[in-house]
Length: 604
Image (cartoon, rainbow, N blue to C red):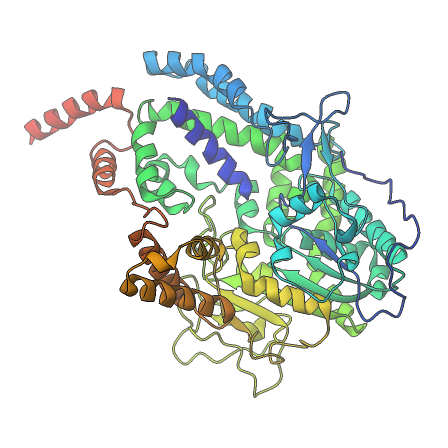
């Protein structure tokens, strides 16, 4: 039961996966960099994405809440207290299980959602509560403590990828992803002024990632004077027009609230669970009647959206412009929501101006680059998950500023000619090698790099993207997608973590004790692994083959334990049988359903 309850709570968490310093400004403190103002490098400010800042829980006295290991407890995406959750759910769950009806379970579940996510709830002016504090880095990376460096590298492991940019020219702007968006824009503007004073430079580089791009884009509209203070902007998978996930959620287009989809496909297609676990949960859910499960999910989602998400203007900044008006009419039309609506209306206008503002940025001589990812269907929380190309979290039109594409798993029509919406050079071919994306329709056809099959939330583990970023922030050698054969316009997605782990394991093997044939195979596998890691042009298939080869030989010699995947076929068969025979009914309802089916057969 405990595992089942955790799994149900995980559904709500999946759907979100989708004490700020507001208004106080930053104390500048004078120049701290050793360079002169005419230094060849520009200070670079990273504006991270959703949940990539340290936002911690505090008690009412402002003290950090610590876990059993003495570490600060994170408030993102929720303040999860498993013991309290089980304590609140166990009695109504057991009662509902015993009586096979909703005996307070759905209400308790909704309360758990409020208790967990409510730590991030804003007031009716979209101001965050006093029990969350964002840890700020008011100095360069060079001055960060080991603790601060660990936080930064946990989210963006750029320390693994050397750059010529001095550490005292790298800054990390942290913020609360549930915070007040206008306050965050003003904070970032003040942070830029602080960085300029600390380094002695008149201009900075910005590297906004994902949600961070919504803050930067709004700043161009609210504080246009900042454009004259920028040298280069490198967007990385930017949410410049939100995410279709938030659009679907805010407009009530939520897939798992359809019981037929919840019991037959949702968990498997969500791609956050392996197939074995997905079918196991489908079978376990039937321990309660479907009416109880659906009542709990509906109430939980309602509380999460209405009590936490819609009060956060930063969440509204992730709603696509084409979904904003209908969502605002649904949630922001009451007088009590007037202050929030005034703020979200302002961002909506900035959203509509976003691409024009980027054109204006370029007209001022600012270099603007973009990294977009494609061919990875958006997570299936909302109804539109498989209706447009994306990167698991954000649809491609948003991250690419308008590139045209076929849907995931499809290709552009035979004979398709690129649109050349923003490219007038007939010699440029902006169609991806597998004929999925037409980059000429994107706003920045010559300075946008595309990664095929890259998952958004694993962007920081793509070594090619990190190396590209390190080069772009260090110098101006890369002018466009034609500048370097190492970084063409279209590249492949990858996640290097496991391959690095395998290489570490291989490095510890005492090869002199191996049979010659095993030693030769290990050396070949290591060479192949290093080859794909050093070659940006290797495909995801090349990467997978190298990883499989190295893992196989390491398992053979006992250096790693071979991962044995659980066979999902039996659970798949059971789950499919239950759904095809009894629909979404729980186990207590199945006997009566069986009797009815027999009577129906006898009538025939």
